[in-house]
Each structure stands twice: as structure tokens, then as C-alpha cells.
Image 1 (tube, rainbow, N blue to C red):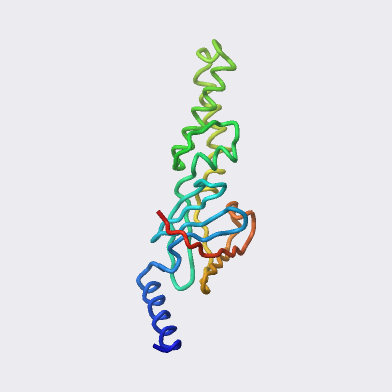
Image 2 (cartoon, rainbow, N blue to C red):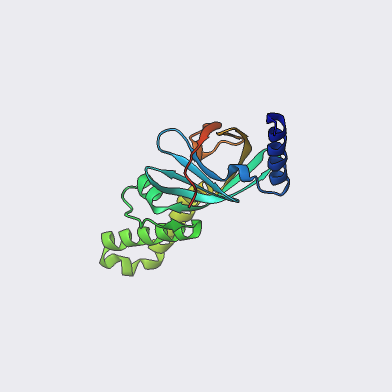
Length: 185
């Protein structure tokens, strides 16, 4: 087969995958700067760093556009961000994290106020609820929001460019990743 024919077959396969709704060209592990990596697997993604999982979610693609939505944060990431929480190294949804913050604030209030907590339980719980829903919930909303952009794959290089400012990528609007030879488990 000629090189031109092989290139044509490859292009048809890529276009067929995109038209089908999933761009299988993204499947695999893509290495970023340092030890960070993106793992794409048929509509699901994970970001790993420092040897462990950090975030996961779902993605959709269409005509070079990508939308990535975070569905879970890992305890390793949360311990890295909130080092004093002592959170278990498992995946957490937004609602699970919100409950952890509520329970944690309540535990601190009980420990600090000891006997007074039982006397002022309703008032303290209302204050905790206001704090968590007013401060923590908006932060979690941002962490669990969808981000859209474009992507392109050229040989072993994946370029992601974001349309919106995102906490996840430190205000970087373009990321370049290199395909790993490792297979996603």
C-alpha cells in the first residue's frame, strides 16, 4: 500500500469515529508537564498527578469541540488542596463533599463549644448551613462545572484550547499533551 492510501484510510477512520459521537483518537494516556497526565476512555476522563488520581468526569466531542465535565474529585487531590482534612483516598461526588464539609464544621463546633453546642444546636447548625451553602457550595459548583473548548490531535500530540476561564487549568487557555505508550487500565 502506498503512503497516500494509508493516510486516506486513517483519515476515514478518524472521521468515522468523530461522526459516531466519540472520538476514539483521544482514548489513552496523554502526558503533560511534570508528572501530570490525562486519561481518556470512551467518554470518560481522569487527571492523574503525583502518581495518583485527582479528578474524573465525562466528556463529549463533536467536530473538534470538546466539553469536559467534572463528576468526581479524588481524596488524594482533596488532601493536596485541603491538607488538614484527612480525607479518605477515594472518589467523591459534589453532594458527598458538601456533606463532608457540613459534618466537619459541625464536628469542629461540637469540639470547640462542648456543652454549649447542645443548648444552641439549631442556631449553630443554621450558621454552619449558611457558611457551607454560601461559601463552600459555590466553590464546589465551580469545581464540578463543565468546561468547553476545542481539541486537535496531530500524530502523538493532543492540544486542548479552552473557551472559558477554568480553575482546573490555572487560567491557561491551551494545553499540549503527548501520547503515552501505556494502555489505560
